Length: 462
Ligand code: AMP
Image 1: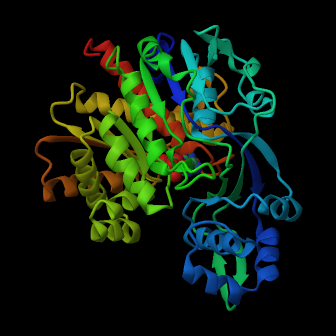
Image 2: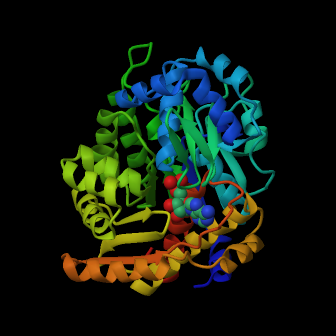
């Protein structure tokens, strides 16, 4: 299928999304504001802090250290901030260039609604007014409410709850080639990307609220696919005594409820989880209930690290070799019993599934092709506002490493055991000067999963 045919299929498909939306306050970094930050803290202090590698932001220096780390490596990353007192520090030290919808649910909901899906139902346990109004004004975009003990799909922009707090994440976008001084060193940023300071409000619980839970089986029946995300927002402890285990148990139950009346396909969109225990719980307990998972190469390394493959994890981190990613992907697929795993990297996107998968290799590649076309459209335009915008992405050429990537992949296939698996890869269509890189991974995953389902439906196997 080509993108136009996919778009036609999408208009007959409905998707349910939960759990995370937030406001993204974006700062575009440049030599000046980076240098100012370095000078404020001093290179020595930053480097010292960097050795500690803080996994959460408790003070401004933690932020400076992790940001500088991201700039040096050019790797996108997200680090949680629990201490809400730091909001003031950020707001007085940075001017936000843009405020827009964030969170995987927020990004994917607007994307799918703009692609004219039949119905997009987006759920977040909190929905403040400022948040609700960031959703696109489309008739096919709903929020599931409960009124008089009945499930009602309401236009999401009108479904806000007065008084609900709004979660604001701060995103620092950096550009390849930006230079700054760090002590004796001149750092040149090797890749464009973003560093996220993810705020963790006490009021926000990653869950389906009790009023809606009884209706999850009904929602599962209404849709063709489900995308779940936001587990990275679960905390170990809450002031009321609840724990991560409590919310993981609830999350598992949610999936069981969604699948109760119909075996609807569930995709989990994984995001970086700094806390290793929580990361392990999500992989060990949530993945086995899902059909499909999407992640980037940093995330695959993180996961391998907590499920007992630290050496392979290190290799992926340090060398990014395709054969290690294939090896790691096979391990995750088998250990968590997934139907399909999708891994996106800057130069290629890959599916790993079993040879019994009903889709042919060609169809799987077409699904990835739709995904990269979608991401390239978003990278070029900043936003995908209608299906016709895909034209733009379809014209973006494959990245220069594309042929090399394919070669390395064929080599890897000869070297490692791939019998019993179907593994396909395509090079990405890479936009040279992207308007923004926020949400590109989510866009790829939403495009890959939706087009995968479109094929299953078309073949009559789902
Ligand atoms: P994530 O790390 O999950 O946010 O995913 C980012 C993905 O977006 C990468 O793996 C690429 O496949 C894709 N991507 C990143 N930059 C660009 C770009 N400039 N043009 C097109 N796609 C991009």
